[in-house]
Amino acid sequence: MAGTEQVSASGERGQRPVTLTDVARLAGVSIATASKALNGRDQVAPATRQKVIAAADRLAFSPNPLARGLLAGRTGTVGLLTSDLVGRFVIPILMGAEDAFGAGKINVFLCDARGDAIREQHHLRALLSRRVDGLIVVGERTDPRPSLGKDIPVPVVYAYAPSDDPSDLSLTPDNTTAGRIAVEHLVGSGRTRIAHISGDPGYAAARARAAGIEAALGEAGLERIGDVLFSEWSERWGRDAAALLLTQHPDIDAVVCGSDQIARGVLDTARDFGRAVPEDIAVMGFDNWEVLTTNSRPELTSIDANLQELGRTAAQRVFAALDGVDVGSGTQYLPPRLVIRGSTIARR
Image (cartoon, rainbow, N blue to C red; front, side, top):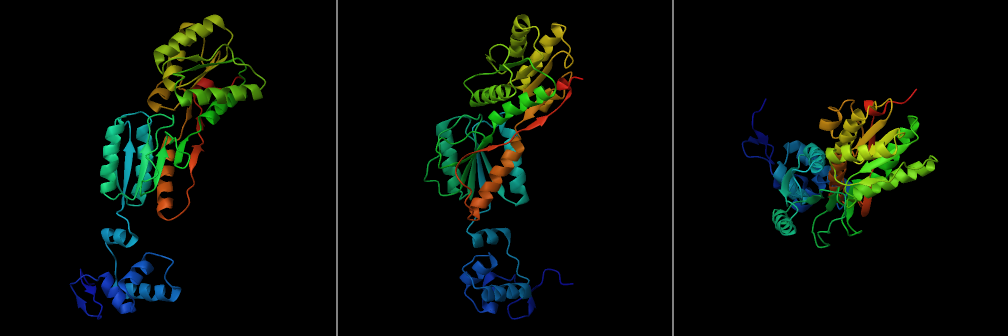
């Protein structure tokens, strides 16, 4: 078997690697036509394409990754621009995107703007100067963020934090549906006196989840027990709010919590009040942060925002846009999923 030898355009064996020029010469076409044919462009007649492919096969032509990128007019790189690299929600999104890029052997440039608009513009200029093929912009919360503008020369997809420009494509979790799913699960588990403790009402996620919860309660013919208790995203707040609720409404049988941290605090207070979970009261959270949910006693039922899938979808949209597919615009909402654990076991 030949080692590194290749067949030359003249049919002789030698050490010189076969080039696109050799393929074009053997097929009797220009280099540009050979490039288009091998790259699947539709400007080439089928018969011509077959001649070029046959010539490439005869010569065992295999362009290296850089050459493939040049043939396609691409560099094989994508920029991931985030505002909070250490954030709880950013990491799984980036992991999902990198999974998708890895499958396509795309190199990724990761830049953290740390929530600074000036730093973000600096990173954006650096990424564009490297001729990245596309950009994914990842926010730290689901509130709308400023658009990068209409003059970006490559496809841009906003993930988690949607762009404030409806002509941009944004992907974000469907927090309203998440609220609905939480109530539907509790009602299906036999709960009828449901309270709601959440975090900072300045967050779009907190407001959207509350809206979904209210809608689902109304559809079930139920009323929320007490006011929605908004404050910080912490276990301490969960403990304090649960104490207030159980003092004012001792007959509540379920609490929907705006985060897993809050839910952990509610579990503590329920135990202090002598209320068994889930026998006396069901408790569920949001985010499915497994370091909290699986280490709680009992383990916490939670709504998972499918952030890795969101990242993968963002990467797929970039791929599709690069292939000339119309990926749409506006904000697209990705569905969450319910993860049932011991804190909401159905009543008999």
